[in-house]
Image 1 (cartoon, helix red, strand yellow):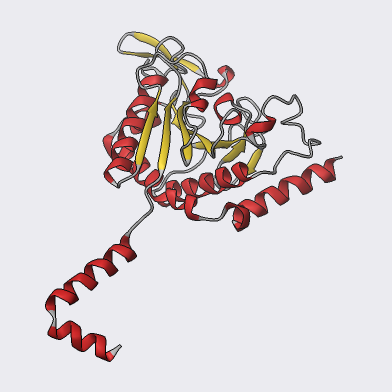
Image 2 (tube, rainbow, N blue to C red):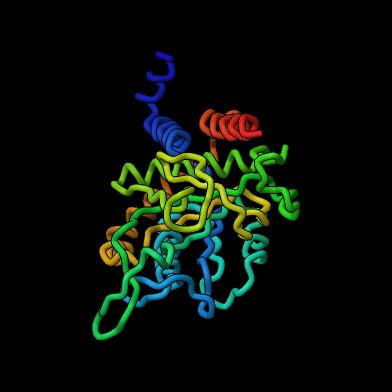
Length: 285
């Protein structure tokens, strides 16, 4: 080692070469192939904000910001549904084939019973401040079981198993951690007994649910669905469209991609989540 240091001092060109190679080795991050799905379309535009804006417009805005950030970091990004003309859900999942991760971007609503009428610039819209926050969803069985009617049943022996679930769960956990590190909090109003359609919670602290959404269950790659916030909440609707908040979400997505470097089969968090779900299912039978 001492001999090498002496040579480096005597041969500046060699020293420069070694420093460049060492720096590249230590600082390099594997470029990932990421599919970003713009939820909904121009015809079925999703829910509506407290100010009458379509969910699709919010979904498109955040996907564009995230795509820009990921590409700037050297990742390969495919944006799905940006023209608003993609009406079917299964083809969205099919376009993700060959990618490392699929993320479908949406924004949330809440049950009609919790919404109130209000006037904004002379127009009547629905609003509520009851709920706010993000939520994340994964599918609980590999895509090869997507067409089985028992895929979501707790008694299905295939539920909670498979490489894609573990990687999807690991990536959902990492994204949740990054979002929370930037001050965002999950909404739990999809859980049993709370407003909204029931979705089983996989990780309450992180706001991760299980769901059999078509874009998740038909996917051939690890996949998560991200609800960025609750649009009928007036304050949250304004926050979600702010450049500063969108930049934070883009940062969270970028930083969470290290989930793809974790061996899914030995990821402790994913294993613990899957084991816990299987134990709860067994105890309930």
